[in-house]
Image (tube, rainbow, N blue to C red):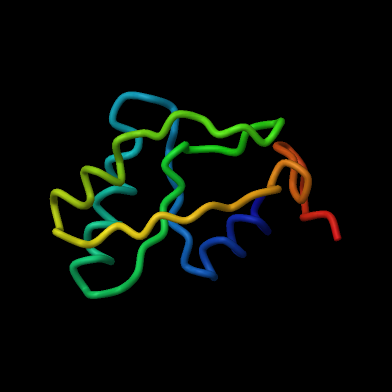
Length: 94
């Protein structure tokens, strides 16, 4: 909803339109601008959380950003999001 959109925008998150086609292009261009300005840009290459915690296949956005900007990639893992905030849940569970 609007509250979540306000929160995510306020903490610097970039929304991604995942409806297919060229929906993610705007997010990639925003990521490119952020990296070219010398800032850090985090990306979840799977594109979403899985309902059971398993890792989905990564998408090509991170490779494209690296090729466009020359920015280094620092891999990391976020584990347990399926328990903390399942898909469709409002606020994270304590």
